[in-house]
Length: 325
Image 1 (cartoon, rainbow, N blue to C red):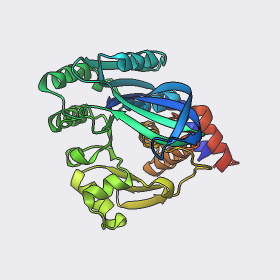
Image 2 (image 1 turned 60 degrees about the horizontal axis):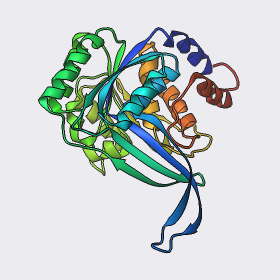
Image 3 (image 1 turned 90 degrees about the vertical axis):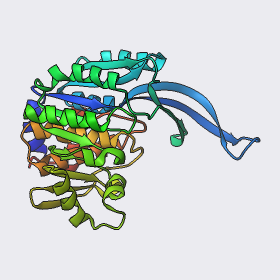
Image 4 (image 1 turned 45 degrees about the vertical axis):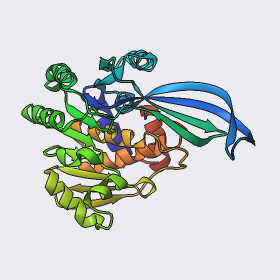
């Protein structure tokens, strides 16, 4: 697999992916706890540092560019300080072309994580989940139209923040298929059955079971979902248990490869970005899944959302594969 990565990575810089999805500002408050509040049985966090990163679909983009490819990123932000921070952060990555529609009536989605003594204490979310209006959807279509035909693949990153309406999903899948551009989807339950006729659908295990049924047998229901959605590939992420992959008539189980798990935030973004990039470079589905699983294991070793890079990827490959295969 190490040799396969070295082969594929030579093509990364030649590829351009279109990432469409919910844009999130991941904010962090780092601190220490030395006492419990007298007001309630909760820890008192002494703030040491604050920072932020581009998250959601923007983190998918950062994973893809971290591996060396180009990305056109399309999403929605508010006319607020958080939106300006996102635009500034993304402008620092020369491999990302950001096309962010600004909505003065909708706040930028923010997830604020409080991390004390290396432990995730609480997360605070600011978001508006109502679906986008017709005018905003029309503007997104105008942005996307010229981008689809120049992309090697399309990633749809649905965080259930209102960007993906049923009509918008239908339009972008139809537009991508007309251009013969493979489409990779990270779905949420609300729109699950809208993501049909795509290259790959990647739910996590909870999302998968919420759709097919809590007691459904994975080995059977994976193929049933694949047929229902008319997808080439179903990839189910199972956390510490790795990945279940369904393609053609094959069901493959891929064990996790993390050396130590400190934070799973953003691991799903790494999986879909790494899989899609390797797939458009010509890797077999199992090869793409193994590489995506390795990349996700590496980012889970960090605290906070940490996009993969070629250097970090080589680190995990060297750890697990001491010789070329």
